[in-house]
Image (cartoon, rainbow, N blue to C red; front, side, top):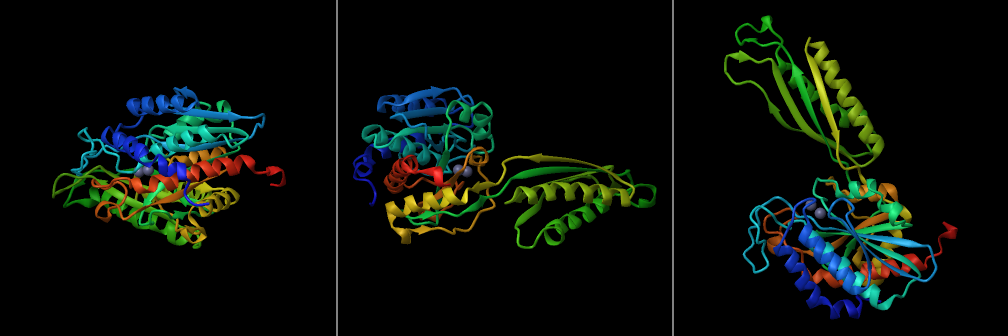
Length: 393
Ligand SMILES: [Zn+2]
Ligand SMILES: [Zn+2]
């Protein structure tokens, strides 16, 4: 079964919706216009519509029959705070706001799937179409889960697509286990004792302490972690001092830590604190560590990732589905949904893109030719998931 004929019928209409959303990008928790469009379309198609979770979140529901089985399909609606450099007709009409991550495409494809499933209703149970705000750092997915997404809309599984340049249109990327990393950040404030640059013996130099800490932090990945695991600890900035002949009181070091497994994430946070405090103490300095956990790793349930890859293969053929795609050290707040329910995120091929640019580039544009593939995937996935007998699981 290739791409659904109905998805091809709707291609022009969905392309128009996608380009309209692209032209009117909205930032985290301010996706009012986009949410209005989503809610209106869902109602027009015949879905029950719920609004207000995570401020601008929208959930559409289709039910049929008496089965209690339910599946969640998720799209994100927010844009990025950056200036679009494209000159085409559907380029952003708002300075400093741009759909450079293809969330306009995700929203559109899920609307297309809702429309077809509402027409065909070839399932028993419930399909919840989850449109979340604020994926780009705001944690809209986390807020929806915290505000009771899965209590209000119980789901046996939850699935999402993210468009991916470098994968051809009509192809998918999947993998069991971690697909994306956690994303944490840290600030280290080293408190030395200021003095004249020519009399370091009269003070405690925070730069020397900071340099030792910077090098020692690299031993978390190289010496503390199981070498089969992957992670990074990157220093992004150092701020301190203002004169050639002054040793200042303080130095602030900031950076990011990323990991694919919760245990590795815990290890990094613990060792970072031990190294900073131990090193500072060695040199007679004090240190304060502020470690902030942002998105957790995005971990696909192996069974659901294989199931979703089977559905993708049904649409595009087995040869077009890479079931062992390389993970990325980027991060996603679909992770919060996957921590709450089994499911999977797959990459949807977006082709070369304009000029071959990557996600978050000022010339990025979701590839409309990928719409029918993504729509067909969501439709078939919902039907197959609800028809599945999980008693054997
Ligand atoms: Zn993004
Ligand atoms: Zn994204």
